[in-house]
Image 1 (cartoon, rainbow, N blue to C red):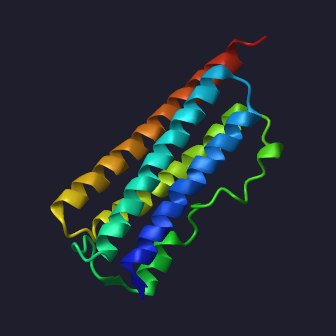
Image 2: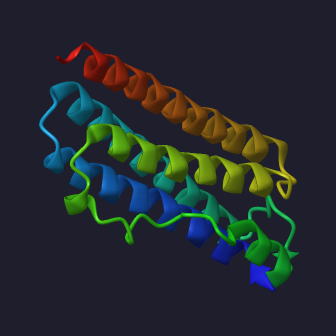
Length: 161
């Protein structure tokens, strides 16, 4: 079985992985609007990682457990099976099209939202639930921003001769 600390460690790693990847992608593409978006998203991921780290510190200090004490391995295995919580396997050098990059990031953000929504069902403490729901809402805004940029890229591509 997994303990809450292990689950929170996974959440921190997901956010740190996203931050690192958004920074790397920013250096790969020259479009200023896309670079600004990737910088903003990296900062958001860093803020989320800090929140999960603080939550872990609180849990481990005995101030209360916001989740059920344990989840079965099967629940967590089912949760992460087939999900792309790591972007390490993506070859960003092979991605030359910003629209393809946006598609990769959309998949990552959608998987992250799903993970956090399932985690929220294990939250017992109301204040922690509200914070986690706020992070979920922010992740959904990330998806909206990415979809907006995808639309702009598609429109720009249609306008090219």
